[in-house]
Amino acid sequence: MSDKQKFLLAIVLVLLVILIGVAYYYYVYVVPSLAKALPATAVQSTTTQSAIPTYVGCYKDNSARVMPSTIGVSSWDACRQKAAASGAAYFGMQYAEGSPAGSGLAQCYYGNDYAKLGAATNCKAKDAQGRILGAYWSNAVYKL
Image: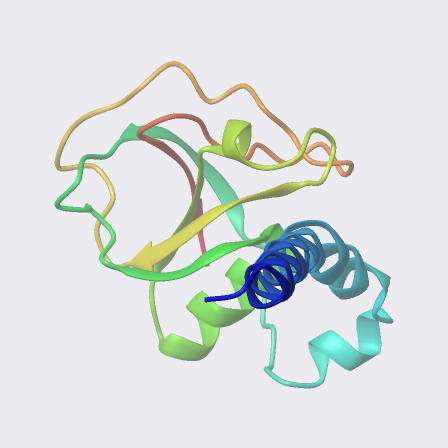
């Protein structure tokens, strides 16, 4: 391989790394902020909401997952809507510490059971509306 070919290959690899970095930044920081910017009517029109969910408490989780269904990292509203659309009785927000500070995002889980591992005490993070988002291996559980 000539020096010119090696140089061009190095440039292509650098551009590929930059492209991956930009895609990661867009997925982690831009997409969540776009979802928060949607008008409430655009989000609420997808499902029928009957009542405001009530906070049940902070409950332990593990890798087997007490609430087995997830949509990954999301906002409290998106998690509530997905759980309601699925027919689940509860949804939980977990590990807000893994999301950018102040983003109001956490891992979303939902299902019909939440307490089989017992209560936890580390659900401290909140979103801008004051709703508890859960913590490391702990779901902030809401009843639909």
